[in-house]
Length: 365
Image (cartoon, rainbow, N blue to C red):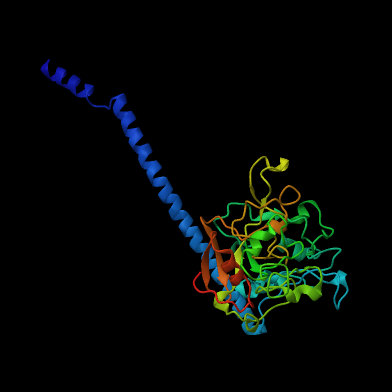
């Protein structure tokens, strides 16, 4: 009888009470809540490092290309005047010509370079179309959670306002988050009227280098006119190439490539935006085209305040250096090194590192 009572006593105290279980669950929840931000930060740090390495590889590819051709990778832009008929020009951007130096020679060798006209675009050849639709992981920042393919309806033909004959799913193309620096320019369909001129004019107080004017400065460059391409004051231009000798301010002082998420953006007050900034990719984000793989440093970093955009957003003129990294963007300088630029960088400093030939001292940045 005594043994039986003892066993009953053990069974009675063998489990946890409801209160004890709730306390344990609460402690576990608190620990998870404390650990989750740390895990997320560690993952973002890893993604940011991978993004930095990819930008470094682009810098190496640029210089390896330069070693062979004595210029940086060039762009082919659709134009309305020049030595060749306008319907036989335009096409691939500098990332395409960098492929062999990014260990992607098999992709490069599949491309056809004889079908880049206004009417059919760079996707006319079946092999080109297949590659156009494909994502190229090395030109997309892993911190960007947007899809790496996007409807590129405006740029299948490589020009500004020519769509080519591609339609529907034929326009679905691989994207890029890295763009070549055209400089500090107003560029026709590469500028944004929503960024007030006063903001740019304040870049260099007391000078006219922040105003529309001669090169260097902030020149107006119509990307559709080949005779104006030489006014691009960055490391890249709409068509053709610059070389190291053209970077008179020094390769370590001039941005060559920077992050651009190609946000649709849009004015939060516009009916189509539903009161929110749209972080989706715009139609101008193809890694294969000049229009998607280049942009100007004129607009402020991570600019949202002035991103009005036409079409209710998605106007490439309003795009700016942007990233999913907190506080700024990563850039590749002309010497191939990679730096992080704060979104609070002085407008004058951003101007100086965006222009290759202004002969202005920069100092630390």
